[in-house]
Length: 121
Image (cartoon, rainbow, N blue to C red; front, top):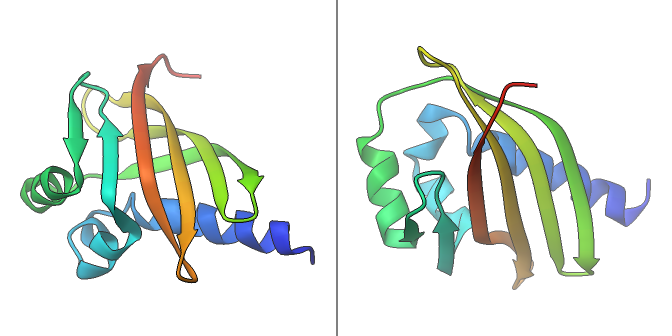
């Protein structure tokens, strides 16, 4: 297996973990967000790490599924991950998501994330 294939699998696994309600509230989730993390939310608002962690703690449990993962290595230590997500609420919410991951001191962390509302596929 090529190194890039294992990075692709790892980053997809980490993104999928961040979609699980129980994991989103854990200390492990906070370790995946870089200190200088920035998110452009589907609401059009911008958030930092502290704001996102507070929002995740207050979030009601919800099922979120993802499909069409693509991982593009931008360098040996930076990757762009894109995918489609569906929040299983009534009505369901569909988003296109992108994250920039950077390997820092041997650990992959998200430095940027964006969610954009989309139509169902």
